[in-house]
Image 1 (cartoon, helix red, strand yellow):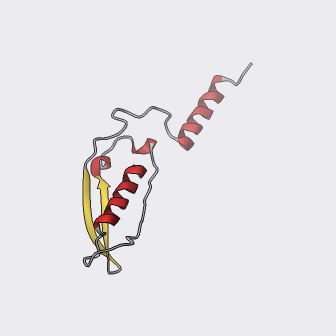
Image 2 (cartoon, helix red, strand yellow):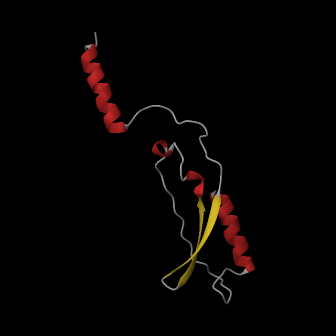
Image 3 (cartoon, rainbow, N blue to C red):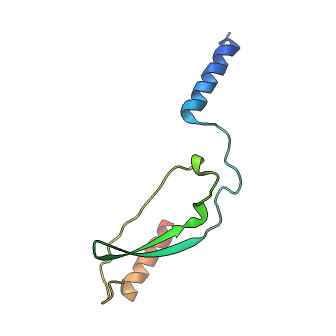
Amino acid sequence: MGLPQANLTKKTLMFKKIFGNSSSPSEPIIPAENFSVLKLTIDDSLVLATINTGYDNYPNKKFYPWYTAVLMEVGDKNENGHPTNEEAELLNSLEDKIT
């Protein structure tokens, strides 16, 4: 049996409107990496942000709407507020494991 074609078309349009078009992402799935490092001061604290600007004009954003931010406080700082060499090694190792 089944539903009449008109009802199927209405339901399909409704689902596309609610959940978006079901087409697949285009290539490249992952854009070329282009990192920028920003140095900021927030609440009198030094902040370094690494941003992959390869996603600026990424055509597949609608397929991957997630965002992740990781905020960490530096435990062992030098006189400029930067991590000491030992602390930097730990932070770099953690970054490598996350990414």
